[in-house]
Length: 145
Image (cartoon, rainbow, N blue to C red; front, side, top):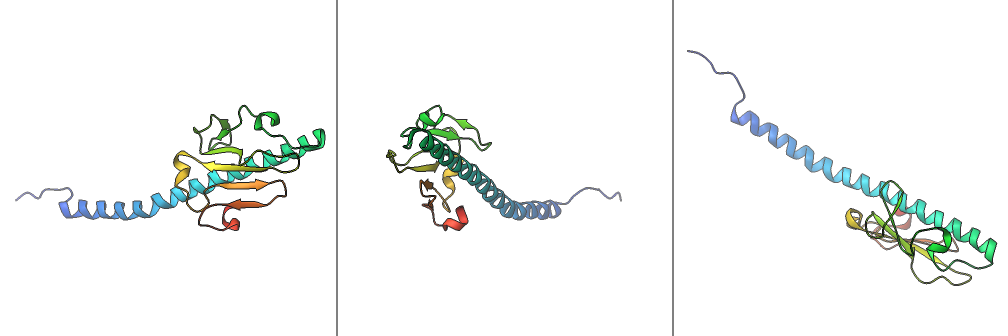
């Protein structure tokens, strides 16, 4: 009798089960990592806007009321995951003022969009003229900032 070589159905099923278990652990972990890295892009952009606002205040004795006055292309700017400005709604965050700034106050916000909108830990990040940092998600400010 000649013996056949190859994999049995049981061996294949064991391999598929192992791959399924590893995937169920790896994929959510990777998605969490991507969301955290996108948050760092938003934090950097918020700090950049705050810095531009302070420079505008030094030059004009008041804060800018529009992002266009700070050198941005629009009043709402999208942020890509590579920290580049894109059209609103096409990146991972939309950057805008949460309310119209006054001569002495401003609050800038980064609202998650597209795949980042699944980030329920931090959701919307904000920064005001006093340097107060907030978030609207289920996490704490120290988790998000």
